[in-house]
Length: 309
Image (cartoon, rainbow, N blue to C red; front, side, top):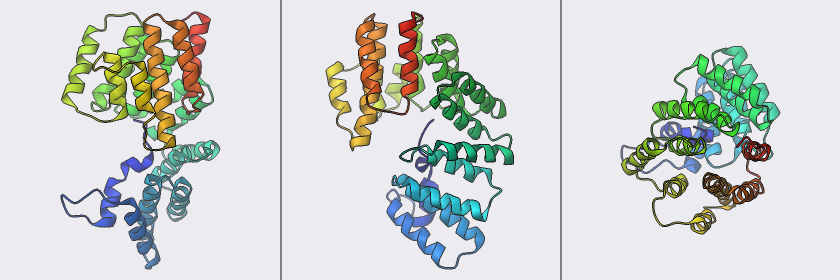
């Protein structure tokens, strides 16, 4: 699932803080301090590499992506033949402002030079192709990610979204089902499977029932749960209520992301209900947020305007 690299750093932060079982979640600020101390205390090459890598992840968790990239670059200086570090640095380049897409592409190609079976590198190159509106290349790259690692759930999710925004709902549904099989706690593919089933005008009863069972078995306060509940008709929120909650993010960036999501998913619901003009209005409002998945929404609008949807 598409997450910033920092979300995978809990183990590194734990090694930094040496927390006892049951202790509070490690503090990334403390992790930065501890890793910095290890770097400056005359660490061996191997210890320094681990410390730079851990501090880079801690910086990323704090949103300091430039500092994270600098530390990952230090690791690459020490260990230039490690494909995984090139991939981590490339992924972080997606989150800088502005994004460093050229550096990301160079790092991913270097990772593949070192390891031709690096499925995550193919997947991220697919993301770059999608950002450039080259959906054909993106599909090919996601396919390569799957071919090198058939158990890599992210690639099925990404490929399914390409199919969805090309109006290929049967193929999208197949990829979302596979994502659910491989990543059973990831909520978004359940939501998208429901939407593409409805967009295809297929019977959604079994899909909706399975999705509802997932929600009942997995309590959540994540933003996606608001969107899921609305699309399933659970609770009392109407469009205005969803948009109001979208405006209550933790900071400006979070509000922007939530508003983009809200306008998109509410727009799809309008489209399913036959309100094409209202759907297009919401899709256009989603575009005004400037979120990086704008190409997906633009493709959806083009499908509608061409009469293919």
